Image (cartoon, rainbow, N blue to C red; front, top):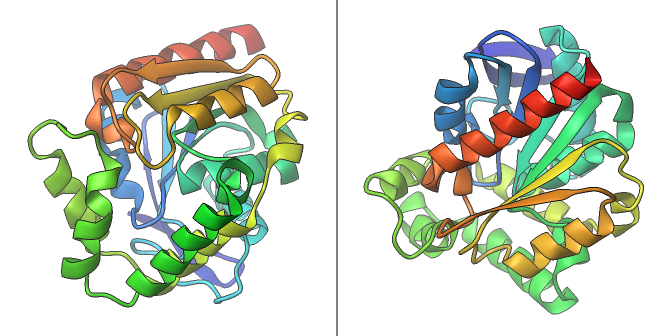
Length: 267
């Protein structure tokens, strides 16, 4: 793990490979370890930057009132420290909300967007009642020991029949969840509605979705597809919410093809 001091926060991140940059943004209750299949498979053609967001993994906790725009500013600072002026930005779930906000604030730094199993914020993709119910559950469950909260969330992260070992790998990652990080990331999802942003996105955009996603079902994928001009939707049959871990070969192939095609067009 590499480390950088950004806006008073200690930020840990992984960097592998050479070539055009892809920034990997994990979901809540996760950290950069969820990107192991991508770090392994895509580093032959790309520089991969996978951070532990403030409030996750080996990074320090932010303030309790940290908002999504401040994560975007911190990410910009990290990319400055890493010497990455522009990148393909890939966000999963909560990381997809962050990817959208990063584009809102720093559009010139985004070569393309890859939004995986995400939302236009819970506020923008779910009913108010469901968004508030999810937030209340996350605030409550953040106080539980991992042995109690992981069984509540792990089943929703995958399809009903994930490959052997995948649930155990994610459970180990989730055991390191920061309670405060869990709360503030859930609050960001519950309070944000990016529907106004979606119609203004001008960079090539790829939506990657697990067909069996329980937390962000396919109707949300179609919501984003209809709102973002020229967006392409790639559906991974049988995969659930954390599709990059459940179906890494398909996920990696989709991302590789999209990023290489857009590098070629840019060149």
